[in-house]
Length: 146
Image 1 (cartoon, rainbow, N blue to C red):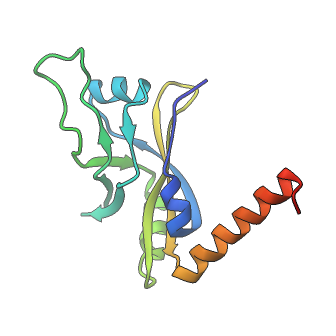
Image 2: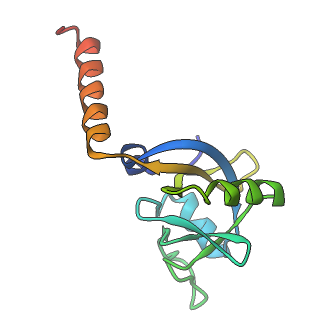
């Protein structure tokens, strides 16, 4: 069983349009903290800087067994995607109201940390209310009360 850290807030706040899986450039103590599930992507966001895609505000707790070579918990981290995917995402972001949201942080079969990101459009308040209504209906049907 691998590590899976989800951003539940992303599905509630945004319509997720296209999903991509990106590698992350990490320091040694960061991957050790991720393997212990001591990370959070709830407040994280992605942004382009000089043609490269970075994730900002992703929290990875400091590794307790590290010496003074520990990492900064909220530093910006480079996302590793190929050039065609980067260009495709950058073209889509030219549309008004679209953003890049981290959805899932996981360790793949090869032991590497990966971040699933999505090009997303913000939901309106009535969309959020409708989602909650659908969720409640589904829960009632599963219980057999309806």
